[in-house]
Length: 495
Image (cartoon, rainbow, N blue to C red; front, side, top):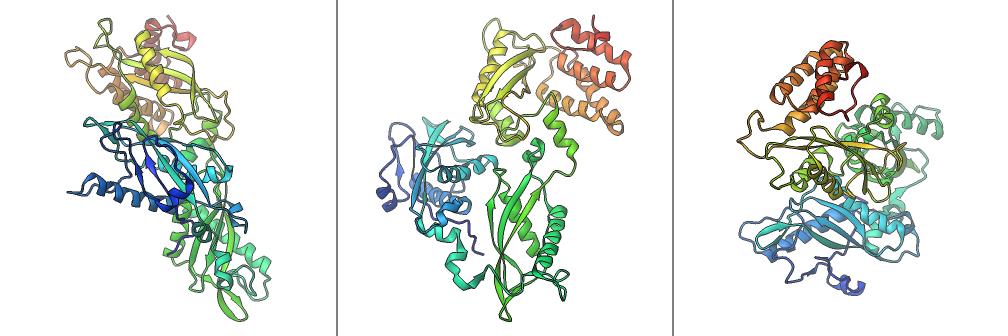
């Protein structure tokens, strides 16, 4: 099925390559620009690890797959619909990490804002989906590198993006009888009443079947996505196009919903013109509304709103495993372990972070604090910034754990980070009476493994204290207060 969002693009890749003239790019759309002394192998789009293929063949294959990806995801702005459309070229630069994760796409030479944003959004979507590239190779090792890709807005792509104009009378905007569901096109009903009924039925379908994207749900992102589609003479939906995705990246879910409509054979009565069934363009909105407001409101108004990494929790863990470096030196004990809680703000324009405070739960010392700060600076530009009701002064908190590095350390079993994460989840479980006992079992096990860890003891102590077990909770909380008086505990549990 033809998709109206597909676009023909011109692209060129290279490590910090200088931009060629637009005319040359159009004549040689898939040229790889190499600097021989920089990388042994250039980073490339995945899916081309062909046995026996040489580097050139893999790169040519990768170019084709990247072209397809851009064609499937590039949108043309509304202004391109006009007769005065002029082909445009937008250069995007982004980083490819050693583990193949891509991030920080930016426009190299800003031009028309709507074209720049649409080109950049293709690669923002790439980062959100955690699509991994094959990293660049230097001296036999994967390295961090950068690529530049030219996205070409062409006449052919423009015509495919706005199919109604080119199809003439094949797709109608106004007809004698509008397309409708069987229960809506009743005898004597006017078009306005029919469409009102159709809108209601669509809302019911979306409300029942919509799967809210996790990152948007966690942040409390809401809004109406404007969608255009064609009800065909075959009673199926075709040519689904998102007119405005309100910057929430809901495209995959929109596509899934309309495919589901066809798969479930939710039959439309086709539109009619002069007594004949015809293809008709229909416009609607898909409401992304959070049904259970408590989850999002809690996230927004809480003193501890969760920052959202562009590649999700799994992507953040991979990033941490790569870039969090444990400090070294004679004065750093290999048996030292613990968590540092970092409080920071996120720049809503750039995604960069500014650290405002640190809590060193186990008194690890200045070197560990410096390592935590350095790691967090590595995440600049990698945080979601579109949070409703959260501003530039919003404070975020994140725990940065350090595990011991020696197997000879007594009473320090491996797996501290995993135990800490499980303890955080278990503490949340204790807020619900039905899962209180289950959460306490996990916390008790974690304390047995790491009896000297202030963060785990604090989690268990507060869980007990909040649920009425004040005496037992104060045992943990007094331990925490004794070893680190900077950690806030209830007054009744202070030493």
